[in-house]
Amino acid sequence: MAQEATAQEPIETLFNPNSMEYALDPGPQCLALAERGRLVWYAPWMCWIMTRMPDIMDCWKHEYLSSDFYDWEFAPPRPKEEDWNNFERALVGHSLLADPGHHRLIRKITSPAFSRNVVDNINAAIEPDIIKLFDDLGQPEEFDYIEQVARHIPFISINRMVGIPDKYWDQIKQVVLTFTETWNPTISEERRQKAQEDSNRAIDILFEVIAERRAAPQQGDFLSTLLKIEQENENFDEWDIVTLILALIGAGADTTLVAQQWSAYAFLKNPDQISPALESTEAFSNAFSEIMRWAANSKMGFARYVPEDRELLGEQVKKGQMVLMMPHLKDRDPSVFADPERFDVRREFNPDALFGYGPRFCIGAALAKQQLYLTMRELFRHFPNASLVEEPERDLEDHNSITFKQLRVKTNI
Ligand code: HEM
Image (cartoon, rainbow, N blue to C red):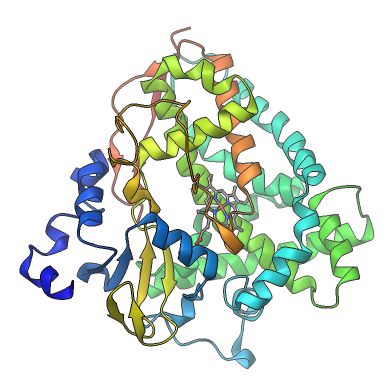
């Protein structure tokens, strides 16, 4: 297979997720990449790309590659314990990412914090904020959906989920905006450092919030549930709580912001799909998978690192190399989805791997779907005749997803 690849045109001439062509129509480039094989070397990023769904599902399920950023050949050296700052103590020392055994244990013992009851309480806490966001918008002729709605949602969700009192919201905001930069392999060390400093400040605040909640526990809320878990499990301490909250910020902020933009865009482009999608939360759950399939907005997929030299899917891979799993490559493939350009919220997904699979299945899936459902419901309740002012300009800055610079909506009221 490797020999065949050298005889072909370099893959970067056919697949460049940072290009405007990709941002406008990722489908053909995704197909071109997937056609190259199951594991493709991508020189611009010095990494392998895993292209096929069965291989990705298998890798998700069996975790034979590492999720630890510090196992990457180009990562900065793993900090020594005696030099750890708060950020490193939370993310290196108690990493949800690093050790699969510890990870599974944490997922198991924290599951009560993600039980139906707790998630319902979080959803109930978020709903008034989302309604207020739209009430505060008033009756403008037009507005930018990203600036005036989407940007606020991840921040509201995480604050309400953790129960962070309003007095800390301003200080937490910066971290929610920059947290994923702390381990982003594609940005400068200086920018990563700055994001880590923001996170260190957030960790101090989280300790204050935890101390306050310890003094006055509440019933059935997320943080009080975690504090109870801490009391009952000697393998779970305050740092694990902080790590978990940072993981929620890291995994839940950018994903939500992107999903918000594409949900509004998909419905504004396909208004006949709004009512079937909003019929019920179950209908919306399927609609959301269709939104993300149709958007095919991912650029990088999910990073893993090779733990030792080995053969993988017919290729020789080396310890420390990055492997990007790209489940989105199938999303515009006509052999997988009939008429893939058509947006159809009743389309069936089997398997539906939007939120991952196996031990690292998304913790925030229920919360993500509910906050999107509520936001779309309010958007079209307030502005049933909304339309796009213009085709939104794609923003090439985001390293991870295709996003928009603005999403200007005409309310037509
Ligand atoms: C909005 C749409 C979202 C999508 C499409 C999504 C998708 C995913 C996927 C595919 C994974 C697996 C990643 C991997 O294997 O490397 C994942 C993991 C995760 N997600 Fe989400 N997610 C979303 C929102 C959220 C939200 C809102 C939260 C938290 C409030 C969240 C928290 C997490 C966490 C903590 C993990 C890591 C789980 C672990 O390693 O055990 N996600 N998500």
